[in-house]
Image (cartoon, rainbow, N blue to C red; front, side, top):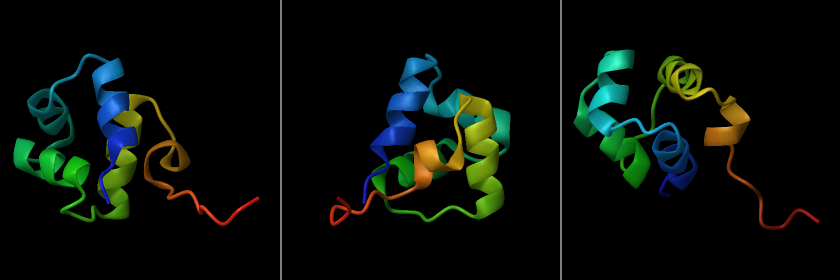
Length: 69
């Protein structure tokens, strides 16, 4: 599942994949794979991404249940 929340949060901050990757110590490919839904990041990496983007884990990584009412 694509992580569009993370991608949009990064774009809102005007941060490139390369810049975000450099700030948190991973490769640009890692950021791209997370956004594409091809990589499941560790909790530690999720927290680092959230701190850099000024978001919470819920904001970026919580999947909303379509069955909730």
